Amino acid sequence: MRRSALSRVLPARARRLRGPAAVAVPLVLLAAAACAPTEDSAGSADGGSGDSGSDEAPSAEDCAVDQLPLKKDGTLTIGTDSPAFGPWFVDDDPTNGKGFESAVAYAVAEELGFAEDDVEWVTVRFNNSYKPGPKDFDFDINQISITEDREKVVDFSEGYYSAAQGVIALKDSPVAKAGSVAELADYKLGAQTGTTSLTAIRDIIQPSEDPLVFTDTNAAKQALLNGQVEAILADVPTAYYITAVEIPQASIIGQFQPETGEQEEFGMLFEQGSELRPCVDQALAALEEDGTLAAIETKWLSEVVDVPVLK
Image (tube, rainbow, N blue to C red; front, side, top):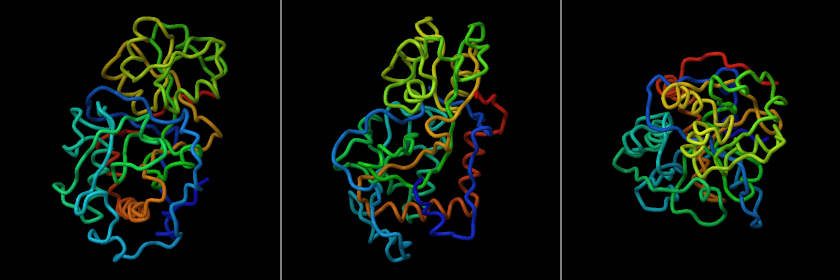
């Protein structure tokens, strides 16, 4: 596990973790849904440790706007994919401050000392975001899961949201009766390429048939409706949006944690070795400390409900 920067910044405070059984229901029904980012190849480039530098908490002077190592002086350049799906963004417009990730991004920007007009968004395809090499953004926010493979070639902030994998099936499908991860192995499954959802299918469910891989969640949803797959996987908030808004004839039949069973978290992605990351971690810690992150989550994602956990 990565060492918590929050513990360095605020050692007396326990981090608030959004557990897998306490999942979020969108209060505001937004645009089309995305698949929770992650996995697949992060490239094989020789990487460093994924640690961008000193464990020392940055000083206020270090994190002053005029001292930050930015791509453009005075501008915080933030990357995300297009379309920008709900409930993470609203109206496919990251600049409006609406949706969970847009709101978090602007809250971090404000904490760092940027006005809204000082924030510039650039489009970054999800699968390109975690490739090694220079970036044209200061950080990317796009439901990107923090994984060990990715940390070999890019840096991540501390996690700002914890998510589990949700399994979506039409209500009248036989797979809707599955009560365990093992039972899912008998069905035709699918997920967006480059996501932890796809990795979870391959590594955890290990279905008898190869899963179908889609370029985006929209294609996966259409395949579910067409009967090409019997179930698709996505992060739970996205799964809620799909079943509540886009495909009401479908339901979330359960959730589970992929990989080692440790909580999967989304982090802001930085170019490896970024000296900006410690300041962003400090901003996130402050937003968590004063309750801002919790308020944003409540506004855009949540009323906590129980979702069956697939064992």
